[in-house]
Image (spheres, rainbow, N blue to C red):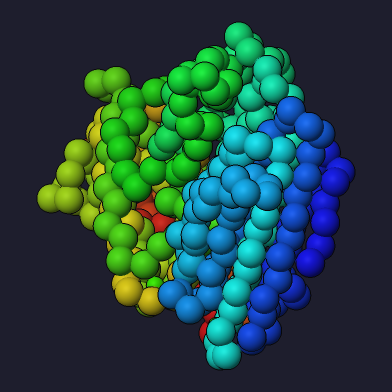
Length: 345
Ligand SMILES: [Ca+2]
Ligand SMILES: [Ca+2]
């Protein structure tokens, strides 16, 4: 049994995150100042379901309430006690283990709310956690709020001081319709790995008469199984610009119209970091094509992008061009072919 009496700290399962042992029976007792309460934030949680479990008990002596029993990957993100004593009991059976858990606790006063921390992928404004205080959370570019309101207020609710709603959470969405002049599209789960069996659609819309420029800031998917398709128009029926997987993407791409459609599909196993794509609405020059870009691990011959001109490409040693045809800037301001890639030999 371990005792914690500091105002804040971290509780880790044995050997976290390598996996705990078998036949475990561990107890952590957290005690804060009389009159204060304790807040738990579950940063990571993975136990063998349903055989290994963590039970959280609130109180001491004769008045102990079980406020949660958790197994598998199912844990709340936050938990708050009503008393100044929390008891965490962890039991593991005779075989198999998960990653374990990483929980941080902090104590807070009678007339305050627990420190909500700074949610990941977000910025927090305000640091008054006292009764009547409020904090706001704004998601970083590319993320949307999937839980909680933008502003939470520390208030009295049924005799208990608590936040007016759940602590906001910002996540990268699976799809959406974007019409800002510029922005970011992230694979769901970013900056972590994306999930299996996804089918996410994004539509980027610029003002009529403008084009959309896409820049690949980061791209890595499971080679041969997880694809990002780009179509030159508003939907799946629009002409295909390219279907990308692995790490081979052009530096950037342009739409010929004011719409761009993106479809990300993943199969049922193995994932990767995914992608970070920047988009911006640009004006097309009426006498030329847009910069076609340069393949990763390659070079371009030719700087003239006016209608009728030609550019060609080469690759660094060890790489081979996916196609040899030069690109010709056609009358519709669109290159005759897609940008070749340089593939490892
Ligand atoms: Ca087990
Ligand atoms: Ca996959």
